[in-house]
Length: 345
Image (tube, rainbow, N blue to C red; front, side):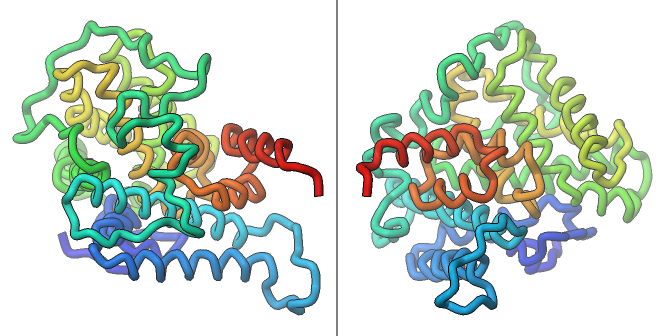
């Protein structure tokens, strides 16, 4: 698929790409950055992010003046981009640990590795550990997903996603499903050329919402496995109306969700509960990367970024708690506990 590089690089918070319909926004470049064997490219990205954070607080003010504490939109962007830099670094380290790229992957900011930090190691044994991204006790009920389910759809030539290997590889595989299969299913469903208005509407926070709501439903648990796509579809429809997104016909939303689900449900062949635990980080990372403005998309921040907190540095979590605290209950609580435990002075 021909495509605009600026869309893949997420250089606009207002992407209306009619070439990819939003399916390649942001995540393509983030994956490329994570897979680059040269750590300098990620260091450069980190420097730009940190510079943007400082500039958002100081701006044009005199350097001797106290930074403004008002939570402006540039501050929210800088906080989100700090998280993206951490996630890219985590993916790079996970890839290096798998022996897939040459040695030399850089450590995270201030020498702290989101993947190998002491805090993270207390909660995980490997990137693919079934306990990954388990929500705090009482918040998740994945085990409540019924094991009565239909056989995976086989109409697609590769209707089963891989749930093994480096996380970045699985993020890329899931992302490629959109352009290679889901868009074609939408074209077949509308029985004619897809209008420019529909393409632009799909680029208006549709794909990130699909993945965010899917992560939410899987994390919360549902009684019947086969009800997952209907539940996700219903949540997307309500979310788009509440957020006043560009309108989409229910048929298109249902088709897209069911098309993605054809690939996801194949994981059930290998033990659904364990596979969901391993799949959730993948869908959450993709939701964050593909979203053109996570700072304006509560579902992405709450259902995807907050549960990925173990992959973020302490500094990034403090930044996020400062600018998006209402959407990040777990990160905000963690930062508050840490500050409470600090010695006075």
